Length: 547
Image 1 (tube, rainbow, N blue to C red):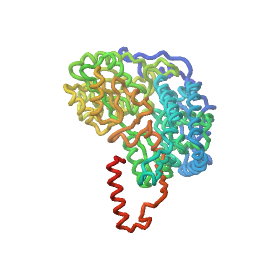
Image 2 (cartoon, rainbow, N blue to C red):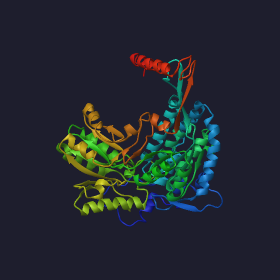
Image 3 (cartoon, rainbow, N blue to C red):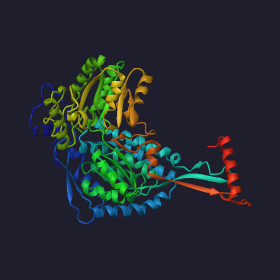
Image 4 (cartoon, rainbow, N blue to C red):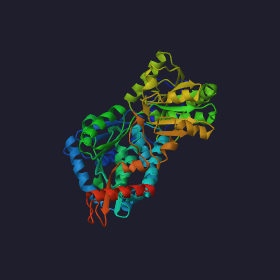
C-alpha cells in the first residue's frame, strides 16, 4: 500500500493545473495508507464469508490510483453457506421483543457518532469523495438508526382491524419478518446504502446476506463490526464479495426478499430473478433529476443550492441534479451566480475537511463523464465551467462542469452521467418546466426553487418523482426519515425510510378469532334464513356507517 500523499501523487500524473481551473484544496495531512493500514484491511476482511482458499481481488484508492486492499472473493457455494448461517441466527433474533432489537440500533447510533472519523477515512479512501460528503453518510445512517430505534415498535405492533362481524369477530393484523434478506449495495454511498437500508431489516427481525460492491466493501465491513459491538449477533449479518454477475444472482436465488440499489439495467435483471421465485424486491435505481428555478426564486440561494445539488460526491449520487431548468427571465443572473460558485469549488483528496468536492471513483466513471461532455461539445454545446479532467490532482478528478446549449440527441441530455456535470435549459412557462422535468422515463428526485412556498408545493405535486425538495437540493426530503423515499418509473420499485422502509421487510399476517357463533347457518337457521339474516345485517352495518 502506498504512502504517497495526495499532493505527491499529483506530480505523478501528467498535466499541470490549468490557470483558469478550479482551485485545489489545501493538501498534506494523513495518507490513505496511514488511515487504512494493512492490519485494518486484514481484520475487516475476516468478516467476509469465503471458505477454503479464496482468491483475492484488489481495490484501488481513487484519490491516488494506488492499491488499497486485497479482499477475499466468495463463491456461489459460500453464498449458500452464508444463508444457512443467517437462517439459524434469524430464528433466535426474531424471537426477541422488538424493544430488545431496537436497543441495538440506538447503541449503534451512539457508537457511530463517537467513532465517525474511522469510517470517514474509509469512505474517502474507497470512494474518493470529499470528507463533508462522506459525513452526509454518517448523518443519514445515524438518523435512520435513531428513527427505527425509536419507532420500530409502533410500526411493527399488532393492529386491531374491523372483523367480519362486529363483536363476534376479533381480527388483528400482525407483522412477521421475511426471514433472510438479500441486500445488494452499490459503491457510491457505501455506508448509507449498505447499513442504512439494513437497520430496519434487522429491527424487523430479519437476518441479512449482503453483497456490497467490492470497491467499497471495507466501509460495510466496518459498520458490521460496529453493529456487532452494539449487540447484533455476528451471524445475523453475512457479507459475501465477488463479481456482480456471479454472486448477485446467487444472493437473489436464496433470499426471502431482495433489496437492491444500482443501475436500472441491473435492477430489471434482479426484479426478473426475484419474480421468478415469487419473492418481493425493492429497487432504488437511476435518475436524470431536474431542478426548477422559477421566476420568483431567491437566485443567490438557488445558485448555492444548485452547487450542492449537482456536485455533492462529484455528482455520483442517485438523487443528484443533472438538469437545471431555469426561467428565461432570470436565467442570465442565475447562471452568473451559479457558474461563479462552480468555478470557485476547491477540488481535493485530503483525508480532512476543506475540499468542496473530491474525485470520481474509477476510470469507468471518468470515461463516461468525459465522453458525455466531449460528445456534447462536439455537437454544439457550450462549456460554461469545467469540462476537463484534472490529472494534476489525481487519476480520476474531473472539474465540476456546466453545459449550455444541450439538445435532445446528445447523450448527456437523456442518459444518467453520474458525474459532476449539469446541463442548463431555459423555459418560459411553468407548464413547460413541468413537462420538461417529466420528460424522462426516470422519476427519482427533483428540486423546486421559489419564494412562494404554496406555489412550490403546487409545482411539486405535478412532478413525477418519488421525492421533491422545495428550496433545497436533496437533503430535506432524504433526511426526512419518517417519510418514504424512492423512485417512480425507471427509477425503481418500493421505498426506503418511514413505514414503507421497514414494512417491506415483513409479511402481513391476519389473525381472526371467531366467538359465540360461526359465520354459517346455526341456531336452527336453514340456508335461506341464514342468508336473510346476513342480508339484513349487512344493510344495518352500512346504515350505521361501519367500515
